[in-house]
Amino acid sequence: MPERAANPLLIWAIAVAIPLMLVAPALWNGYPILQSDTGGYLARWYEGYLVPSRSTVFGLYLHYGEHTHFWVNLAIQALATMWILQLMLRVFGLARPWRLFGSCLVLTLTTALPWLASMLLTDIFAGLSVLSLFILVLHGDKISRGEKIALFVFTAFAAATHSATMGVLLGLCCVGWIARPFLRGRIRASHLLQGTLTIAMGAVMLVSANFALSGQVAWTPGGFSIAFARMLQDGIVSRYLNDHCTTEKFKLCPYRNELPETADDFLWSRESVFNNLGRFTGMRDEMGYIAAHALADYPLWQAEAALLDTGEQLLKVATGENTDHPTMMHTYGIFRDYLPRQLKIVDAARQQKTHLTFGPFNLIHVPVALFSTFLVFAFLFASIWRRQIDEVTLLMATVCLTLVGNAFICGVISGPHDRYGSRLVWITTFAIMIAAIRRWQRDETANAPSRTA
Image (cartoon, rainbow, N blue to C red; front, side, top):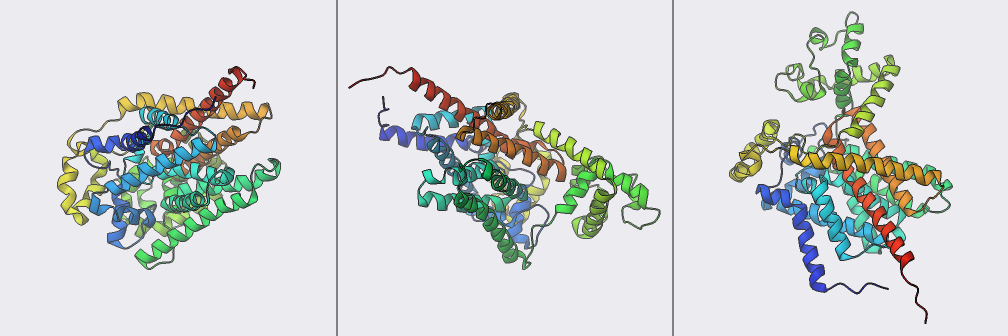
């Protein structure tokens, strides 16, 4: 029996309630949630030069929300989240207002999603861009032309906000082109081409923004520098310096026995030798040289480290990394230098007045994330074993490839961090919910009494 049309008042109530749920942490805080990297993005408009791993596209996005104390940014993030979740349910034939509300409620209570939507950081766009690319490529025939254009622009923008996000999306498209001949027409070439072009458009956006703000036609810097820091954490840099300092003169040679144990301590600690040697400006060439040659000198060690870091990254999914007060001094400094009128409001927020701890949340978030991850891989392997390749299987395959690709890119280049896992792992919970609703819907249809005319 077909379901009755929803009450318009109910639809409007849900349309208002969902964005409020998604930004509930910011509403509780009294100001958008800040993170240690927020200041680096925000400063791009004011400083006018490029810094490693800080997208100028996202910096411009933040700048245009300054006059609203960034609430317009959170509104965009919440509305985009609701829109894409609604599209996902619709292309799977599950579009009901109460299902959308229930899905958002479960994700709000059990995952990092509301914290991502409430934070001034690129992370919310990582998971959303994977879902938007999935809709565009695999379900493009189920959405309108206007929705295709909107998804295209959104995915391109999301790709431009972070190099890892762009890398994951590019990897998904590459796998799509490889797998397409084996999927018996399930992926249309025109749709896959549109998805691939979103990444090209994202690259154009990024280079254009870099040129507009810095006068340089350049990619966001930092690749070799960040990889160098990860190699330092794995002990590879110390070994390289010990092997070569007798014959080559590196700035780091006098400090090779005093290097910090972690990449974060090396790059971001005030007392690090990295600061004494000129940071990225003074060390860029040397770090790039060592990273490239260490890769050639110790290939097996690098491969083993990459495998271990990828595996560790898959398990690091806790919410709230680097949102506590002591880790955000750089962000506070950016506000003090460029947005002093907002300092009073920033200081009055709960994040600054009290110790923001995610321990209680992670008692729920981490088990849900890990269990959901286990279920999506189990579902995919079971479907392959049964040779059942339907649209839900393709969703699970997309999610699994996303998790592995993200873990490899982030774990190998930057080193494992909870933030890199938590920003994506919520889509596993959503994928499991879609599979469960589809199964429930199918069983309900099968058990319904037949009606004859």
